[in-house]
Length: 291
Ligand SMILES: N[C@H](Cc1ccc(I)cc1)C(=O)NO
Ligand SMILES: [Zn+2]
Ligand SMILES: [Zn+2]
Image (cartoon, rainbow, N blue to C red; front, side):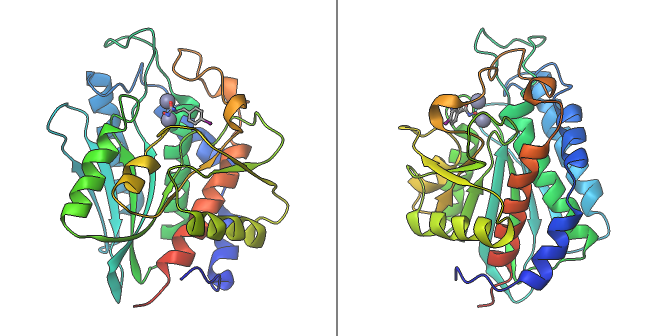
């Protein structure tokens, strides 16, 4: 249910989340020349993420990290699973995409650092994981963190995954997409996108912001098309939400170029921290519900 009733668990964890950790992961993950879905760099970036999440989760027998193989291309998606205790059939998904692109054409050595798009989302998920493990948080539902391959070439990684979950009849109760979280280009802090998402869940997400981050302001906007991986889950009938860094016409002008760098997002991750905190509150409030 969308009841917000885990403040005693969530609030202490939010205070432990740090922009400096998110910034470091953005720097590390945007150091690959590119993370394009068909290059060796792109394959290496997926393996790097698997290793990173595996080491953070080491010591937790209820956490596994796997790579999802896509038939048509080499770069795999990365899926971390925290198995729920007594309500594990119900699944909460938080996602970001691990690939990057340079619209001039992306060969093995083309620069596409993708610091904002979407290392910022991957880094936000990584900080959520770190703090959940540091607090030995154990959800009742299953929580999955997903790094999608091939988002930039038509949401192809998340489409494969969402279709396979639907085919398996997996009961995904909610999905949050974090794509571009660190470029503060608009007046409001967090923009909730209302197309290709679920209205009831969007209201819950807004309530999470007012409850746990009351100083933040909320905006609403539309993409007008399936602008990120939330649309893949929505297409399969699952409830998805996308909190985004800016209003539609004020998004990061550097994306899909060699200039999408951490420095060009301000050289700090204070904007991403808002999204990481929102993601953690989403994961714990939904993840703590029993059968
Ligand atoms: N299409 C999206 C970028 C994108 C998404 C939403 C908005 I508003 C502006 C731009 C993309 O490139 N995702 O990787
Ligand atoms: Zn993009
Ligand atoms: Zn993106």
